[in-house]
Amino acid sequence: MKPISPAIECQDGATVSVQASRTHYCTPRTDTGPYSHVEAGFPSVNPPDSWMKYAEEGIDNSIGAMWRDVKNMFDSRNLKFTRELAKTTFKARILKTMPQHIIYPWLPIELVDEFVELHGGKATAEDDPKPGYDWCQRCGEDTWSLELHQCERCGFTD
Image 1 (cartoon, rainbow, N blue to C red):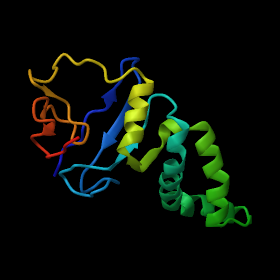
Image 2 (image 1 turned 180 degrees about the horizontal axis):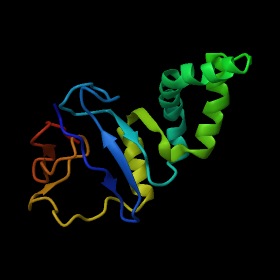
Image 3 (image 1 turned 90 degrees about the vertical axis):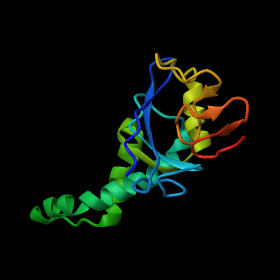
Image 4 (image 1 turned 180 degrees about the vertical axis):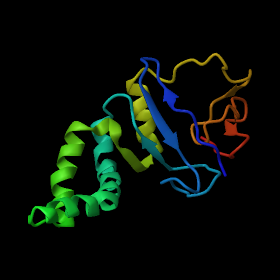
């Protein structure tokens, strides 16, 4: 099983968790890339508006998991409650007030790049990649050969 990747940290301090494996919402849903879509979540700042349509699916999944508890609360008060009411009521509130607490499933990798660029690019780490290599934008490892323009780990090319 692929280990959880550390959050991406940007130059201005913004962070976002980006995961891709057979257990995450990504394309392809395997432990090796290259990935065209990833699971992003819990950004430390509000994400770009371009992420919002992906948030809705993540919220639907969350509401689906918790709606029975909310329904029981309404039933105990003799109020009518449906799954659709939960989605329309809570989805708007969550999207507006809590975009940093949402998982963004199947987010195109280009939108992750957009987030990173909006925040000044990736922060320089003390453990910069070895000479002649850079971080692969697909698998996140420092196996991108500057000479070959290809990742030696996942095979991604530009």
